[in-house]
Image 1 (cartoon, rainbow, N blue to C red):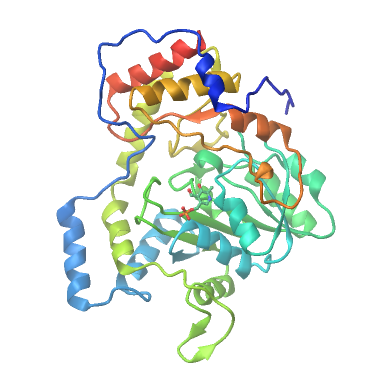
Image 2: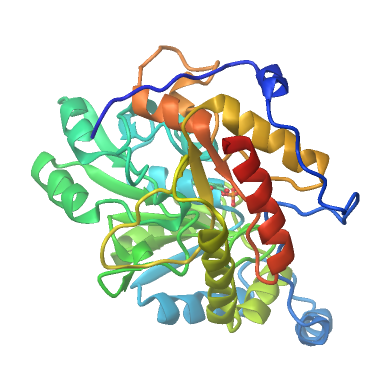
Length: 390
Ligand SMILES: Cc1ncc(COP(=O)(O)O)c(C=O)c1O
């Protein structure tokens, strides 16, 4: 892992320094292109589920559709236990509680969506940041091993962009150091490593079924667990900590509703075709974008990838800001996933430097990617990127 820190800018106004004027493309206004577009099921299919919910009157509190979706997902992912819940943030929080990590020191990555760290803080954990691997952008096992102290109780790596972490190294490390291993798999539904769902690794793995994800329930999430006891704990935690009149422990409301579960059931069958359609968009970007001046994160060997994102890493932040500004001017909206590096959040108690993550987070941009993004628009986006590079 090279710790090379390229030139960076902190001020978005630096984009104004973009030197090369954009050549006219003959198209002044197009409908906005967002970084992603949520999958929606066939309206009549969802309406059929709604009709059943309306007639039973069972809207929430672990109804038949949540049950059906839990079973369908467990089969599809080949995981032993899955507790569906209201979103991926609560999934992280109840996994931390169920595993006993609440209030303890947990090593995690500075390169993720903010929910990874906010869930830790919300659970009273102290995040210990280790740096990322510059190639895969996942938490770097060697950097984690250097942060292990007797009072560290767990590790929370993130399968960033749907790429698998080094699960072999983390599995061994957690076993040897007696650490609880929870993966934040919010982005990795549909990815498999060595033939197994990426969500099947670790003591727990959490997922997000937010509307922007490969598979979604509008809002939703889940925790994969590996023992009946862990599943029982999650079941209690997500529903106020009680069964009937018997109160076992402090819980929260993290239940998924029947309307949300129905959306998941209506979308589940189309997952593979949506992933294939995303792969086509990836291929088109790969063909249009130049090999020099930008880099793509390396995918782990033996990974079947879900094509959740199309991140590009520029040599410097100035180029990134130029691209963002010019895309915006054409009604095209990329996203700075993931910026800023989470070790620099202003509400953290202490500063823990992570130079690789800080540098990458200033230079990485996700280009629009969703099934059906037209080839002509992919070419236009690539042209704007190329123009800022030259
Ligand atoms: C890495 C990561 N963790 C956690 C979450 C939180 O999931 P949710 O939005 O379902 O609460 C997200 C959501 O995008 C995420 O990307």
